Image (cartoon, rainbow, N blue to C red; front, side):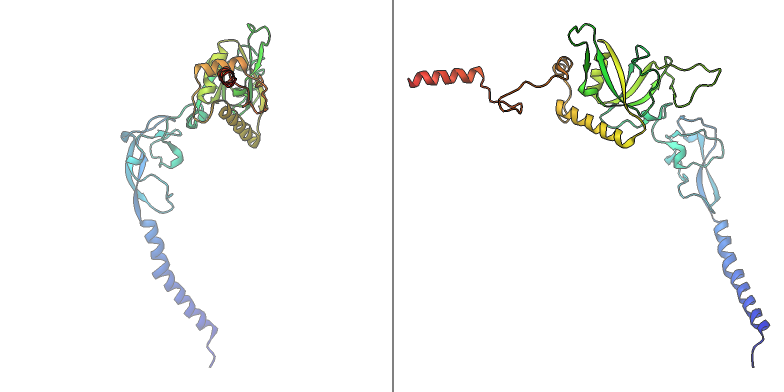
Length: 293
């Protein structure tokens, strides 16, 4: 006896309804009804402001579709800085807070260990590349000293490839030359250039700026691969000149300023080591010869 198709469909419908009623619905309900405690903003905080415990509150909310990275303990957030403007009721995610103080120039927040940020003044329009520099540019600096009659312009090995962090006007405000100014907006002019430098480079920049004029030449822009290669070459130059981990002494600074770019004196073996005898060794040989006679 063949079973009626309607009877089969009826049995399947009853089974499906039972599954939905006793398994699916309780599972969804348990997930949506579960709660957990999270940290939430209690007061409004502007970007860059230190977040304190008075600005926070611990509340119980539904856990359904709640991000796993949301802050759940006040001590994990108190003492950090707001990376954006925060308002009462905001949940706190990692991208909304910062462990380090913020500045208007984000490039100053992540200076590598052993490096410094230093600004140099652009004395004229030409020395600052006609107000066309941008953050991220790789530049070369030349020094002009009118007191040096024989060689007033010098190439500086220590400053051949330097990264620009930012460009500022006379009020210290960042200048953005990537977009043209509005019709009624006055164009900002470059007053200082902030660069990433080693302590040795910073000392040279300070001395050269106060003993002449520094001119900037653009080497690379928008080419991350080339920029990285150029900075690595500059590191090799510094390592060759001063050695790894060595600080620049006043004598080395003076020597660098007077003989930068000059070739090493030729020696007999051509490798800079030479086999030229000193006066002491020559005198010893003369005495030995006299004794043998």
